[in-house]
Image: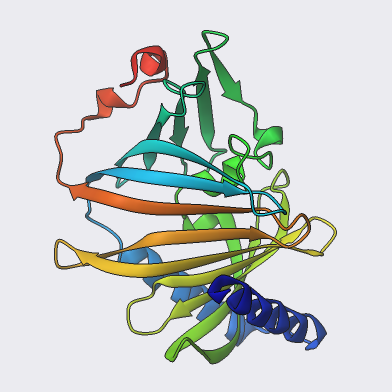
Length: 265
């Protein structure tokens, strides 16, 4: 019920946003870029992480299916980040591995290994808007945030769950993105994204993503331990809960190799 109440409020806020005329100008675009840059800058220097995560899929009737997975990430200071996701359960998905290379000024690269067919498949750029293994996340949602991928506009300053926030519109630069725009609520104190509204290519409200239970790691890096993606058009949802998160592991560049996806453990 708590989540339903929150989503009702989110839908109301979305309706207000849709009916409020917004006119971008040079000053609001410049401030939007400043906020996006600050968001990126406060999250530099983390090097690498390993997370244990439970993914819960819910259909419109509330029926659930759970998946356990590990996510290994590597910061690449001169480019976008790299991430390797390995599914441990259920049995029919165990051994499935997904590798993603984000890039600052080039199309992202993604591969997936499916044990059932025993082959590595490359995700084409034109299919980046497709669902990530049946979840409400798209393949393009599984990449790191990189400033040149969007244009920005500060819509307003507001409150979100009692905190002062910026409400920012960001528009994908990639013609193959499944989104026409995203609206973000970013808190002023730590530049953490708190909520994202996604709009499809027709401009219709598509999904709402909420980040909760932020925890500070290594004294400087905030990470949400719970993320909730709700599809407004299908009423399906996907929840990600992080149980364990380690920084400063022994991961190396060679651990993120598309040729080794079959051996990912």
